[in-house]
Length: 246
Image: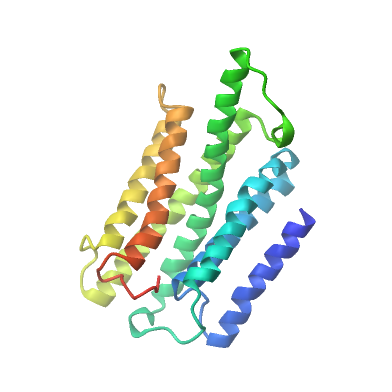
C-alpha cells in the first residue's frame, strides 16, 4: 500500500508538471486523459484499501491493468506537451473532461471487482461440486459478497458523475456547435455507456438479475467506455475526432 501511494504521488507529478509546462489543465489529448483516468483508479483503490483492509487483495488486479494501461498509453498514445487545439479552448474542457476522467477511473475499479466476482462465483460453484481448487493468491481475496458490494458502490458513485459529464458535454456542444445533441459517434456511445450503467444499477437490485447477470452488464458497460475512448477517437469520424485528441 505504501509503494502504491508513492506511485500515485509520482503519477500525479506527471500530470502536475505537464500542466505547468503547457499552462492548462493536463487532459487535452488521449495520452493525458488515459494517464489521469488510471490515476483515479489507483486513488479509488487506495481509498477502499485504507478504509477496509480486507479489500487490499484487489491490489494486484487493479494495479495490473493500470500498469499495462500506462505502458500502452505511453507507447501508442503519447503526445508532446503543447497548447490546446482551437476546438478545445473552452472553460468547459475542465468541467466536462474532469467529470469523464473521474467516472472512468472509478469504473475501472468497478469492472475489476465485477470480473473477480464472476471468478469467485465460479470457484465457489466448483468447490461445492467437489472439485479441489488451489488457493494461492486467492486466499487473500475478499469474499464474493464483498466483491459484489465494491462493484456496486463504485458504480453508484461513478454513475452520477458520468451523468454530469454527459450533461456538461451537451452544454458545451450547444456553445460550440449550436445544438445540445447531434448523435455524433462519441455522443451516441456516451449515451450507450450511460444506459448500460443505468441497466447495471437496476439489475443489481432486481430479483433474477442480481449476481452474475448484473456483473456481466457491468463489464459490458465498461467495455463500451473503452470502445468509446479508443475506437471512436482513433478510427471513427465525427465532430469529436481530433486525430488522437480526446
